[in-house]
Amino acid sequence: MHFQFDMAAASFRSSPNTTPSSSEVPDLLRQLLEVQREQLGQIRLLLGYHDGGARWRAFAARWQDDFPDLPEACRQAMPVLERCYGKLIAELTENLSQSGVDSLDNDFALQDFLDRFGVRLTQLGTLLNMVGPLAEAGTQSSQT
Image 1 (cartoon, rainbow, N blue to C red):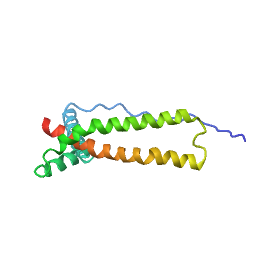
Image 2: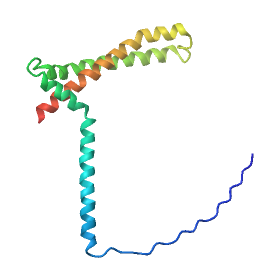
Image 3: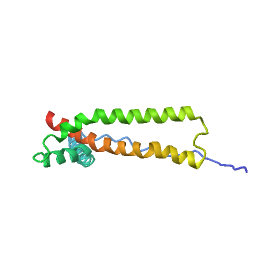
């Protein structure tokens, strides 16, 4: 298949060079500043909506009376959970490197691999995703 494209140079009319008068410049600058302030307010609002830590800080503050030591306990539990998660990943990668390239080619081997590592990794990842933000929320609320 051969295609031919003929492109002609487009000619544009040049716009006359207009410069704003000296009285218009401050007004334009004020308008620009107002628009930028509005944009800044909208960006701050958007960031507030996407702040996951705020949700956990509110949780910790709301239940402060019932669970006063929860953020500190989460902070202490994080290294233990992270170490366990790292060990499991190291075990998984070691298992794969020792088994070879074709180790997960059949359904039985794949299911055995998933039974050994999949559920535990998923559950540990979920625990890290729940405990970590609470630990950070306690750290942030104690700093402010």
